[in-house]
Length: 293
Image 1 (cartoon, helix red, strand yellow):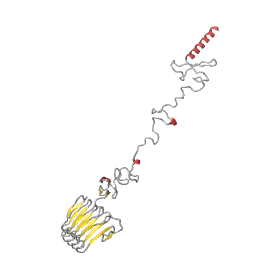
Image 2 (image 1 turned 90 degrees about the vertical axis):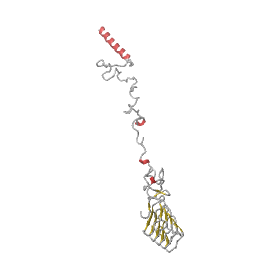
Image 3 (image 1 turned 45 degrees about the vertical axis):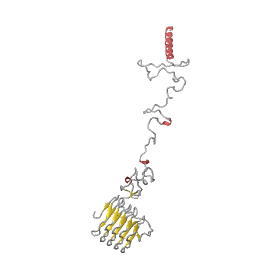
Image 4 (image 1 turned 120 degrees about the horizontal axis):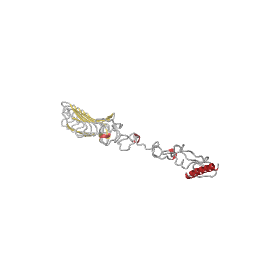
């Protein structure tokens, strides 16, 4: 009996020495349960070593020092969890990293800005319609930036909204100033200037009525001279402006020795067979048509 008790005491002592060597604190009142290791491997049945019953591995009654202070594991993209549950290094939050697109364009904001030549057109925006301000032909849908910096298709005949009729006009009708030389020699040797801001028509219907006359056309608006009397526009000098310009010679020898200097817009001379053709200087006209063309 004594031998058995000594042997049992020896085994208990060896067990206590083994537990002490494992680093676990020993208290006199603790009871211990030895967990048998399976298969002689490094881990126990549940991956645990001998643990005091009723206590934690730290011996302080709390959670293990290794169990929670590291927080949640890193996210799949390698970023550490940030405050509020957002992940640093993960996908950007909504609205972050947005790239400027069409919404940032100035071509539809109803303001004249950026390199626009007129509001929301020209420059890097869509070409402008006729009547808009331009700096170059590329600013205009018509491909033509007329003198004065206005988009205007070649030959476009503008209509004036002027209500007053200037003294230089015989009469005005529908935004057009009429200068009428309908009697023989009525305007001979005179200098006729069409007023600005209006389309102009000079009517030379009497014989020699506009002979040796200088006629100046307005800028931007149409200017037409009709020579229907005999030698009515002989030696006449017509200087076109920056609007469409026309000379019609229908009377006998009506435009004999006459000259026509074109502007930058559509310039055209039309002649009957017996009217004689004027000398035509096309200049920078966007279209130039001589008699017979």
